[in-house]
Length: 230
Image (tube, rainbow, N blue to C red):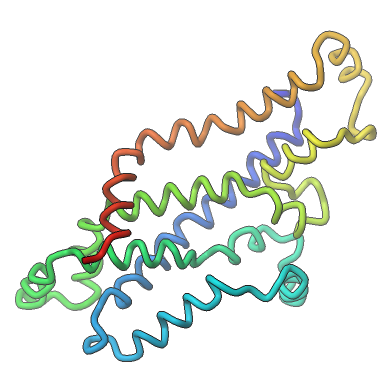
């Protein structure tokens, strides 16, 4: 399994996907949730933007229109097709929005009295306080992208561009006779194909198992405080 270059190439594709998706998602979710957390008096048109985000969350155009759209913009067989569709998770925006609402408004008022502008208050007052919710959203984003396999099979025409989970799905469900070498046949006499598949799944799970303990301490606090308003 360690000598399988296709496995490690898919591993690198997934790492590239995470390197693009996680920072962009956190940034967009943060700058979207902050104004949405304000009242309608401070943010005109807030209700319009709320429905603008909620409607696509509940209703979708379907798989074929999505594929045709991505193909028209040249995203098929491109790494960005794995990143852009899930760039603004509405659930995460709502979670962070409710979390920011619970923060004391006096802190921003004190910052504005000291001469801080909206961006200064956003990144120097709200951002440090919203760390638990952001860590929770980061965990959702990492696990979601790491476990996603269907979009890779759907939008990638060449197996060399598969992310890790798409590669594992293909490896588990079917063998490609063209990729089996004489050395692989000799190895198969000693071990079963299920052993190799289990080893690949185990190695693919390790990164999430390593990351999770560092974010777990923020998970409960960020999820509970961001999900309840009242």
